[in-house]
Structures are given as C-alpha cells and as structure tokens.
Length: 337
Image (tube, rainbow, N blue to C red; front, top):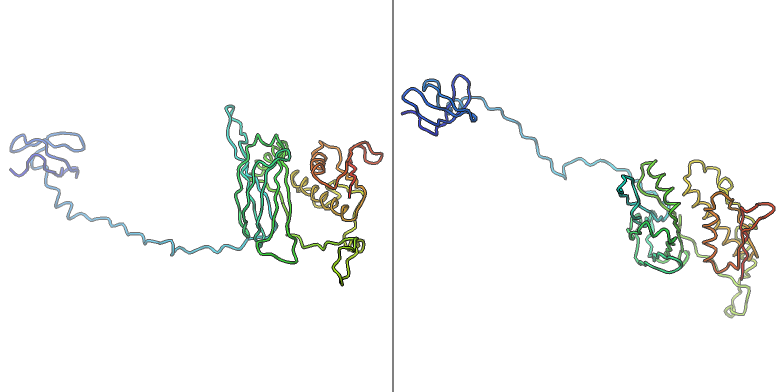
C-alpha cells in the first residue's frame, strides 16, 4: 500500500496538504485538512515532497544589521546657558474620587546653571524651626534632587533657606551667599494653573544670577587697625556704593518696562529681589528708615515683605498704616544699628 495512516498528502485539485486518518479500501482514504475530514480517491492525492522541492521559494533579503556605534549621531548644539542658580518645584499630580487633578507633593530640585561648582546647605523651616537639612555639592550645569514636600505642608508657610560657598575658593569672591524662598498654597495654585495652560512641568525661583564679589569691610573705629596701616573710613567707602533710596516703589512697571509677558510668580520674584537690593543699600548707608510701596491688591507682596522683615535683625519695627501719599499701600521700616 502506497499510503499509510498518518502520512501527509497533497490534494491535487486544491493544492492543500492534509493527513491520512483512515484507509477505506484500495481506492479511497479519509483525509483531514485543517480539521475537516473527507474521503478522497487514491489517484487524487500525492506526496507533497516533489511540490515542496520544485516550487519557488520567496527569499526575503536580510536587513543589514546596524549597531549602536554605527548609527549616525545627530549633531546637538550646545544649549547650555549660564543664567544662575535656581530652586525648581515639580508638582506631582493625582486624580481624586471626583476625577479632579490634585497636587499631592512638590519634588524640589536645585539647578546649577552656571560654570561654577558650589558647596551648599539646604534647610526647610516651619515657623523658624528647621525640619529638614541637607549639605552637599552641586556641580556646573547639574540638576540636584533635594527631597519631596507634601503639598499640605504649604499651609505652614515653609521657608526654604540655602547657603552657598565656592568649591574652589576665590579671594575676590564672597565667603558665602545666602538665599531663601517662601511658598504659600495660593501662590502655588496660581502657578500650577499657569503650568497647565502652558503645558509645562515645573516652576522655578532664581536664587542668584552670579556669585557675589567680596566686599571690603570698613569701620569708623580706628582703634582696631593694625599698627602702621592706614584704616579705611567707612563714610568714604559708602560713597562708592549705589545711592540708597528713602522710598522704593515696587510696582512692576516701575522696576522694568518689559513686564507684560511675565507670570505673576516671576513678577513677585522680581519685586522681592528689588526690595532686598534697596533694603541692603539702606543698611549700608545707615538710613534710619525706609518706605516700601507695595500697593494694596490682594496683599501678597505686602505679606511676603512683612514675613521677611520679621526675620531681619536690623529691623527695629515696621508699620503698615494709612499714609497721606500711599494710603495703605506702603510699609515704613525703622532700623536699629
């Protein structure tokens, strides 16, 4: 017998292959083709080997392998821009049971976008008490992860305090640079809304643009001067400083003419930097007082300035009362030396 049960055969009229499941007699057999069993005559089938051997095979050309080292690399332009040291906040969102996006926490990073390496001390304070502290080094153009802050902790008005010093000492530069940032929930909500509108992920606070130069320390008391040296006169030294102001207007249009494209957060940052500048100039010139015009509005700038004044040792007192020229939109600061 030419065929046996289990042989693979070719159905001549259809070109399909099947398996012999039963030999009925010398003329017929039962064949299973793709699960369908039917009878066929012996002369209607054949072994498929000749067909397999003679039919043309379609040869698919092999793709030439490319290795990672062989892939042509795109030329990436150097986009590193030295624009200062920043504290960056990344809001981590989640969806509540009502389907609304809510902020769970803030991931905080220190961005050093300068060509200088710094040692730094980072502290988070609540009501003047340090709750978290970290000391480390941030290298040029490095993004340094600090820690996470639960969003609910913003209700306690945390203060982010940082102190920087040069990794490679420079006699012409200051011994250290201090910076601080305070965040409030209302400000963060506003900023997050702006991020969603602009399809951005983070918001940042500039800590300093350039590390400060060393300032000569002068004194009016000559009794401590080394023998044989000529002391500096503090009054003469103050003549080389930028003139101080008795009144500082912090309305953004008084600070810069290019303010229309700035966000509320950026405007507030610029206003606080201007306040710090003229506050320190007032101290350097030994002014008895300083009037800061912050406007009325929602009181955000006023509250920020008052929070800063409570921490400054040179402040004897400050008052925000009705002024004939500024109404309730100004705070007068009195200094003690």
